Length: 159
Image (cartoon, rainbow, N blue to C red; front, side):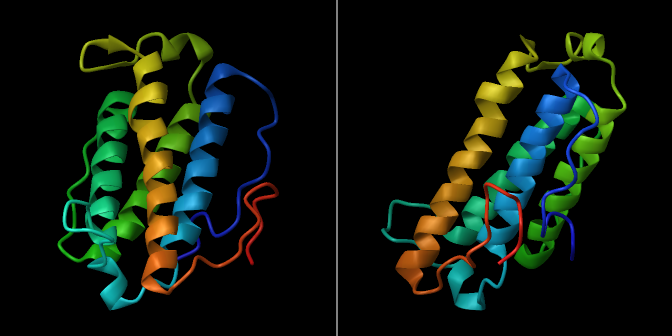
């Protein structure tokens, strides 16, 4: 699976849609490396009884990205049964949303809403939440004894 093993090339211009698409690129790259080479036992790891497991967090990120997809693309995805497939579909969903945004005009962003709220709530809601959860996965992996491969998140390059 190569979606987001490295960050895509820069957009050819700066606009609202290209900035949001690049934000999704950053999320995709971080999610890819936070979930790369997870062991079977990592998916069920949780640092405490009242926290989500890594697998549950991945499923939650899937839900967040599906929510954004419904708002941006008017398309919902069917969640796979196997957690490894959920991970792959999250990366596909991020890529599909990125591509949809690149084909939009800035004015079209104003037409997008999420649960009756303006477009801005997509950024401060599910996208920001997903980035937070990627950090959780990274932290939980360290606690589980399987640290994240050292990709360069600033440059967007693999380890």
